Length: 75
Image (cartoon, rainbow, N blue to C red):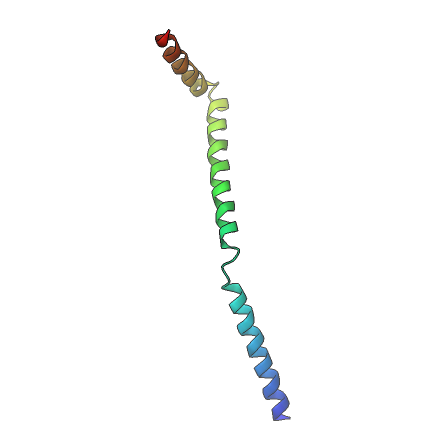
């Protein structure tokens, strides 16, 4: 009976170690990093769009005016 219990506990210990070893695997880490970068870029774009549309286009108009002034000064 003790041998059965010891074998069961040993199998359980091996499974737990294999599970933790699988969690430390870093193969999918770069995918998570790229997803994080994509989320940051999307958040920045959302903030810029909200700022341009929320302020009546003031920022957008200022950018367009500066570009037009630069073009006008060339020709």
